[in-house]
Length: 443
Image (cartoon, rainbow, N blue to C red; front, side):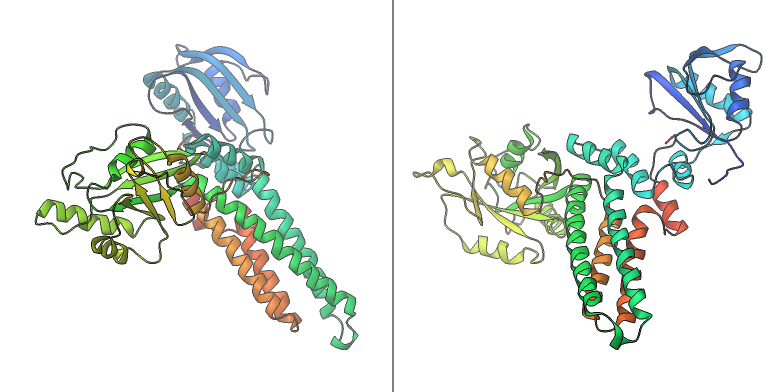
């Protein structure tokens, strides 16, 4: 267990007024602070209703005190939680009292960082705490809870265990001259490698789904003026978030709206209509549209369903970033005499009537690579995807150097090194500082 000579304290509830406010203290002085504040040290892991007293014995507040003795606490240290009334002034008074009794103000994420350093959580679980707090959709919250519960860590540990077994076999083979290596061992080594690669691919696929739940995707609506971009945004959002007008150039700037589809947060960007214009302000909006497209994950190119593909449409299509996928959406399908059928490359919708919108929602998720998995999705961050991809690259290199066991063993070692960085078995201190600095103070 890591030992900390200092004791930290912070308000653990959100800013503003509330029914309940919590001050959390962790460290070796927690018991003594309890004696000074409460007149007694509460029985560990039992709720104790009492006054929280000032230095002269005057009650500052009244509430419930909970005391946890190390290592049986969130941080692995002695912890005191004071659950009082949620007023701003009273919480500040209570916090200041704790600070005068020897605690210092906790840094952002320091409670969870101590839980990690004391082996109460691994790094992926600790990040799950922050992701659970920051979750914007119900599905994202469930996925973050799976990470906090250890599902992601378990998947990584299974991969690491498989790598260790393969490394043990490989090192044993290195102890013998090449001509004495049993062919069965060679086949076993190749079989284990293929199994590891397949398992890693499944974990990476699940992590990518979790990353989408955490980060969402940015989807830009582009097209000529008056093709219905703002109307489509309003239909997807379920409210009037963009001004709709028959006058070309009504949308002058990028309008951003976050929506949810099956728990996936999507950031819809309604852009200025793309055309040649003499209006200086409109041209500034068009220039900003092209800047926005470079940051999009998917581009929806809107056209009117009853109009032909024009030279202007071709010009817009040619100007789109080629490295970003795009989907053709034909709006105003209600004006067609025959009911159109959407297919892989084209979706027919009517922003006015709502027809085809459900098909478009499904297509949006498919286009950004999201699919619901029966086993459940755990939350993942960009650094997790990078580490998994790096491990995958090393396993691929290992398969290319199978006849050279020394190089094969080194690639396995590097793959394990990459995976260990996810759960924190190997993590640079500066990365830890970056991760926990993004947490809430008090958590």
